Length: 267
Image (cartoon, rainbow, N blue to C red; front, side):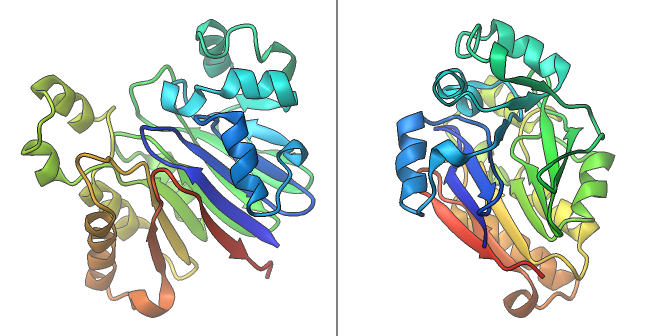
């Protein structure tokens, strides 16, 4: 049985699990190894059996514990050369992942135990930010956790995915009228910041296809969004384009601090 588990999602820390009995991976290690171990164990998963780690970018809420996790478990850590160079200087990872380092290349798939993984670049204010298209033995996932604008690669891979995990960071009205400084608001709003609920809805509108089954909204702001606002925005756009939301597509906002599990049967 294939499992997708959001272990934590948001500025407090990000970590996602995808795997079955034969192969599994983590995307980002923004929470502690003990927390990962405990939360996976609650789903009867042994963290030591994880095969590899994918890194999206070098912001601390995604790599805070990557170094210590790598030192303890010695799992291969995949990222581009640009991102690995940045990690080599980051205080959370410097000198800690050298023996685990593996290189990936933009828009070039690599396969491990029958699972195909394709990294691609998205706009965000990190050294480099990656999304991942993962074909897990025929079940296709798109992961894009942080991005400020929609690009062609995002639309291309999203159009092939059965299951989309995508940022829906803020409600525009909540952000504009909220207590953040003008500088922070500008950073979030620009094309290398974060996606709003409306921008995420635009992605779904542009790529919707009949094979799309699940939309998981991640990295919701604690101050400028609510799960209801984010899901309502996506549901509304789906209804506008004639999709029976109740029957065809599941829309789920991922919890910020607690785990969420989804099971998939192979077709």
